[in-house]
Image 1 (cartoon, rainbow, N blue to C red):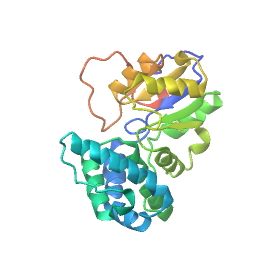
Image 2: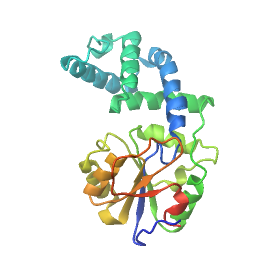
Image 3: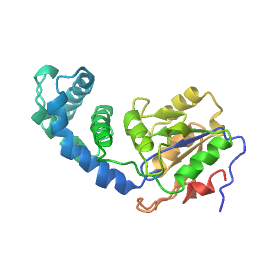
Length: 249
């Protein structure tokens, strides 16, 4: 059954995990791959210029975690003295805590980049996603992605799917550099980037708290229910879909 949305919708803003892509792909393929390869990656790139901002951010985060009494594996600065072993232990600790911090996501994206380039990884999307992308673009609507994964990780996933390279359909990408996904201010920043009316942008996600934040900023909000997603039992005010075939058919 089609979901009734305004014809004036100009942009479709999409979450990835549990929305365009099965949760199992993220938790059973991508995360284990990053965990298994992080030490090798760090040993190979520890002194590289591109990794230094991530290491500096991890040192700050580690100090904050220690100050809060969370007892993380300790990192001893300055950045040029941190070892690959120490960073690996802390990154594993962050992954176990399911942190969404920018430095962690940046390093994961770099590891996945190597994996995609080697052919170890291949992006996965639900079967209705490619045809929805084609349909929405033919309708003249923009498609944008907002995920806690880095922009690099987003582009890698959509450029290496079994349906081919889907990035030509996507107009823009947003990650946690813009702000947390449960913060309404993040969506206001997206509105400013897209230069549209908030009510003409629809955000689709499998997380009610993210949809609440988007709605607070004035966006249309739609809950996506996919196989493998966590059941949504608490009362919520958002309309639901089980397939992108239901959105702007």
